[in-house]
Length: 142
Image (cartoon, rainbow, N blue to C red):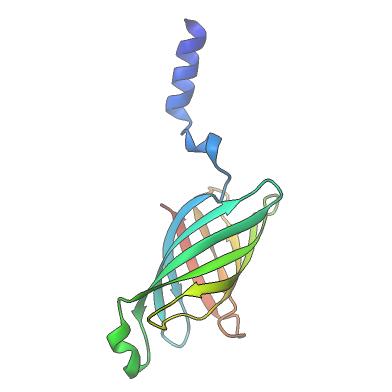
């Protein structure tokens, strides 16, 4: 009886997801922006295996564009598929876009160099942004 009570207490304190997923697995939400004036909203899903290999996808929503000809595309979506690696010891996340589903032509493939915060609920860093490394992305666990 005592063991059952302790197990129940433990399960109430520690979320079940802690048993089923790694530190990056799951859904992340946030924003990407560039100095040129682009703003995208992101919903990212990641999965990391035991070796640190990472796969995922990012659903992007174009929120702001500096180009007049793209104003009609605000609110449109596209998906970027990513793969890379996670260095758990240093909390470093490195992945690149390799394919996209982008019927509205609002996306480019990017490269990402991120850090997972010590609290495990914030992820952020820089992106390649066509070679300038000036894209900024900030995400939090959903």
